[in-house]
Image (cartoon, rainbow, N blue to C red; front, side, top):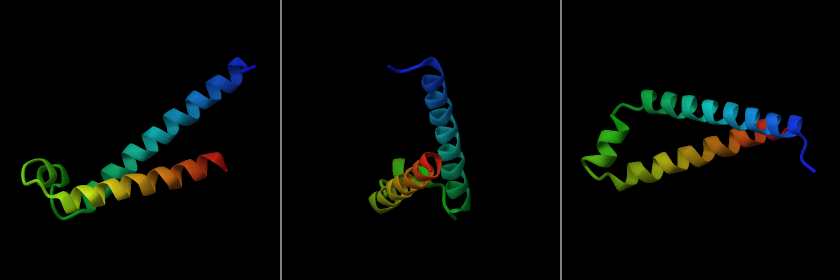
Length: 69
């Protein structure tokens, strides 16, 4: 049975993980020399879209491992 404290802790960890993920991705976007979203959306740069996806997956794995312990 799932207790309320375990459920609340899971929600807290999920929220913290999402916030850290968004901040990390924004920092990566800020450090790149071009506007990533403009390149992907307007110019259709598939290579940059694949790179952004790889960065997102990498960040998610790192954050998930750090939170899990």
